[in-house]
Image (cartoon, rainbow over all chains, first blue to last red; front, side, top):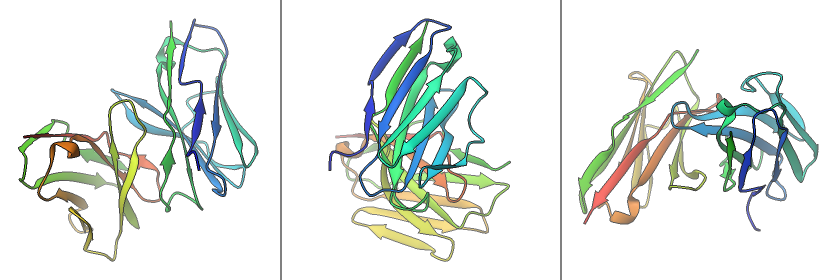
Amino acid sequence: DAGVIQSPRHEVTEMGQEVTLRCKPISGHNSLFWYRQTMMRGLELLIYFNNNVPIDDSGMPEDRFSAKMPNASFSTLKIQPSEPRDSAVYFCASSLAGPEYEQFFGPGTRLTVL
Amino acid sequence: SQKIEQNSEALNIQEGKTATLTCNYTNYSPAYLQWYRQDPGRGPVFLLLIRENEKEKRKERLKVTFDTTLKQSLFHITASQPADSATYLCALGGTLTFGKGTMLLVSP
């Protein structure tokens, strides 16, 4: 298996633009997690899906952020409109059956909002 | 809300020595703790999970302890090697809350 796949790997955009990050979890995993990592705040959970259903979205900063998981093999995280404070590395992770199982992280998307 | 703290300063040790990293938490009683390793520019990689009823867990040169009274987990790497240099993160089970990590530097 190729592991968790994220795209793009790097994204540079201007404030106010819409940004869409994509994730393909490991086949057979039924849990998917989106995290954001910055030096100041560390690794923070944004949202957690189980069987394509959002279970915990308490970490989503505000209405500008939205996430979807239309099927078991694809998820998106959208920021609209983007702001400079959204600059961070965004990780997607998947696990076999929930957070108690080993989470496999993707390589991350480094987002820079100018 | 729950809080998790790891040594913020980097830990520098000599090759061959044992490295000990600390993870403290408050306002929560996790059923388990996880430890991850993160290399620069990469996502975290899972190392070990320890449950509240397990005092100690080992995997090769790694050892994790879990003291629910002290609300603390210790992560040990014995016979450390330069290749062990990385940032190590702990995560509170059930909350998906990660510490900010401790950077370990092992010099030859």
